[in-house]
Length: 101
Image 1 (cartoon, helix red, strand yellow):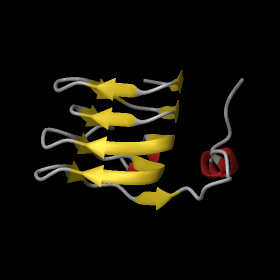
Image 2: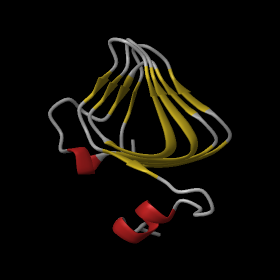
Image 3: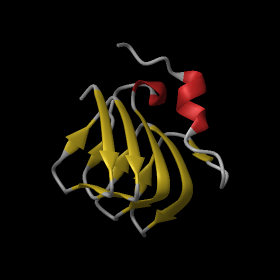
């Protein structure tokens, strides 16, 4: 919960929950849950320079920003997804969300 920056891949295993603002410089694998079930999609957001993979057991209620999205049968994505264009280094959350220092 809160703000998280990862240099490399991030895996949220089945039973795991992450919420807040997450930046991943690599791929993101979701087997668990991203965002609270009863929360607005804007309360949790992940921006990923690589690919977001949501497994059959994965649940995302947050906002997803990535270059690519891979959904497996049974994946549950309830929040929005926006594609990041090549050559732009994570511009979306930098413009939309202001980080507290």
